[in-house]
Amino acid sequence: MNELHGIKDLKVADENAEVIIKFDNVCKTYTLYRNDQERFKALFFKPRRPVQNHALDHINFEVRKGEAVGIMGDNGSGKSTMLKTITGVTFPDEGTVQVKGVVAALLELTAGFALEMTGRENIYLKGYVLGLNDDEIKDIEERVIDFAELGDYIDQPVRTYSSGMKMRLGFAINVNIKPDVLVVDEALSVGDASFRTKCKTKIKEVIQEEDVTVLFVSHNPASVKEICPRSIYLKKGHIIFDGPTEETHLVYLVDKRKMQIEKLTNRLNKFKETLNNTDDVALIKLSNRKIEKITARIEILKEDLEQNIKALADYREEHYGTSSGNISKSKEASEEVKAKANKAAQNAEKIVLQKAANGTFRKVFYGLVAVLLTGFVIFAMCFSILNARIDFQSVYNEIGADSKYCVIAEDGNSMTIDSNPEDIAENNNHEIVKMIHNANKTLGLPESFFSKMKKTHEKDGIVKYDYSRLKLEWSRSPETGLRVTYIKK
Image (cartoon, rainbow, N blue to C red; front, side, top):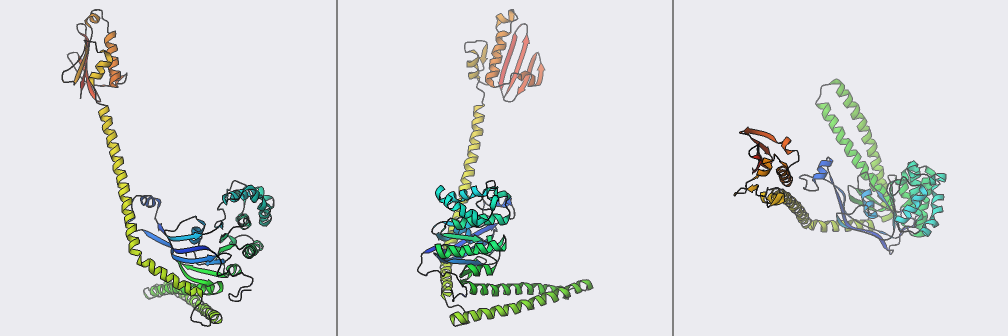
């Protein structure tokens, strides 16, 4: 019996029990980008005006062994990010998260499942991931199958399962592997009511009998009250309240009603402003109807707010002897949070300078990489150009250094190949054609270069060709035979 919290049959953690989970000044920030191009650019350059979402902002709390803690808050308050830091899916930007023991998490319905494998195979897969051996998995296999109530579907691929069936299998695996920490994030919101009740009963059982620490996230306050004697209220990455679940729920309702009233009041003022600035009869009628509906809704919320404030005051009067606020350890925890936040603020300048230094280092690093790559490209181009330089001496050596019919000019800028006089007399061009062919091959000219060259000029029997790095002049006559001259450009 838990008289303090007003919740029956829930185990209250021993204050002297071992701390299983500890958050110490934890911060997690996500940078939001408009598109994938901006996200890619941010790998190399720091965004000028980044839009940042502080999912967790200086979070401090402890959870002891065998304790069940609920996490309350609207969408985007940081609940899932908190659980992901506990399970190791993501890591904090600042602060430390300490978790002891084996963590079993049911964060998303398909998380950890191989969709093409059967349910039975996924039991083994999950067990291997958590470090269990074959014998240990066999011990829990039948218990998992019986608890999940999947029947013949246990041997079907998980991709054929409905969302409720995936939840059944995932929850059955996690509660039967005897973890030290069980994390459940909105998973019990699917499936039939009878199985959800069975899951809640099982969670209470593992808490009572096996001292499992449970972190439970749900938008349904009734579910949290059934399982968790303690709850944390998160809002925009901050812990607003940490205390008994019933009190936390009332604090949450009071704060939420205030936000709803403020939002509707802003809408009401906009309609009134529109009403004062228009002469359109139809728009005036529409605005009046909207104003009436919003006004009625605000009145209902104000009544609900007054009831919640009264319920919160009555609760605190009953348990703490005062209606002004909680003077229990949850208030002390809040003071501790404030003290640590103040300490973090004092170190803010140091953190900013460190981040700036990290950003500068990143820019310098990528700048050096760019310079090295550019230098490498320039070096490769220069090497290619130098390697492509024409060397007539090497050509001469290749085609026959003893040939007196191949002559290199003194300046080294041209080379001439003449026919042998004996070949001219016999009208035999075989030797000179062979020499020309070898010279062309050594110079890297294609075999069909004569047909591909551009004919630029023909005069006095001399034909001139222009080809990339050199020019050719060649002539043919019965008196002189063939003569080819290679000239560097």
